[in-house]
Image 1 (cartoon, rainbow, N blue to C red):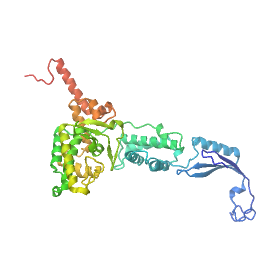
Image 2 (image 1 turned 135 degrees about the vertical axis):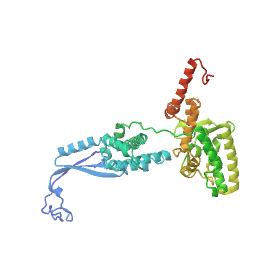
Image 3 (image 1 turned 30 degrees about the vertical axis):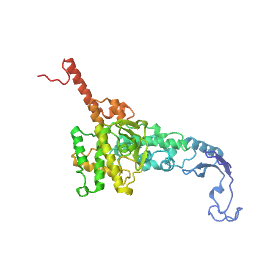
Image 4 (image 1 turned 180 degrees about the vertical axis):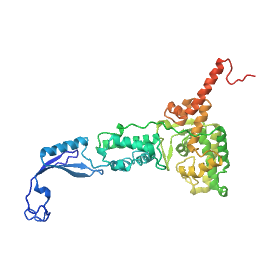
Length: 433
């Protein structure tokens, strides 16, 4: 019998075998095999449809359907094919496929950060959905899941989950189910049949005022946030000097944290006063930025470039002094005391948060807030949105304007006042004596 793997199979007619012992399931002396046991199904005339499918691991598994007559069995087979949309394997659950997709199919095909993001999003899938058969899942099931997550899906507090995260979960499932279609386990992407939640919970971005920027820079330069008992240590001095440059560079360029700690010395052009952003630190690995817009070259002010130059000289001297203990194999601008890549979580918890506290700044300020500060200050100063968008590595000017709408509103108000002054015959900013 040929083993069709798309539901094709064989109809088998089971002829009854009469036996006095069939109801007791004992060894039967009336059958050809004296050691065989009687089976109830041998005592009745019926039809069996045998076919083969692949399980989640790609192994061939035999399955069967039974009915009293051939016509009845054929109807059941047709219904099975119709229900499963032409895919015969109805044993795989949503959870089994999601696990196989993230553990076997994705590794080596996407960046590590992308894989981590997919795993994080799939972690929100409820156990109820995971237990459902992949082919029995409906758009209503997923829509209900998204609604529940939106209302009380937060892993930490059980409160409502942001629309952005729910949209990310939906997008991840679309990609996951598309892979199931490509591998022959589905024919319809159920996730695409759902509606994403309205993105109506945009949070206010946090940024620093001019005064707050100056306070943060002073604290970073002084190192007063650091443990006083270890400030005389050479390694501590290396880090204090380094973190001061990190803060200045973040404010001066608006670079993302992965771009800052993934910056290499070969990307710093002291002659042209520019930095080429073409690497991103993920864990301990340098990767290319996720989008083409993130790969960019931006100008840097003279003072910041001078600080970078001084830091390069200090780093080289430090590496020379500690000799073999220092190994900056990635040639990154910022490292640990032994030359290893900076661990972002350690920097946030042990350096940045204490620095923010010492400067008397709100605890809502994060390293990403320095990127927002860069954009906010430039837009408020009248720098055009296209230039700001290019410096930030955004995909479009529209996205930049949408993100920093608070500044745009202030600039627009100022433009209205300026136009009013012009029409009144007054020079903008001039006051009457």
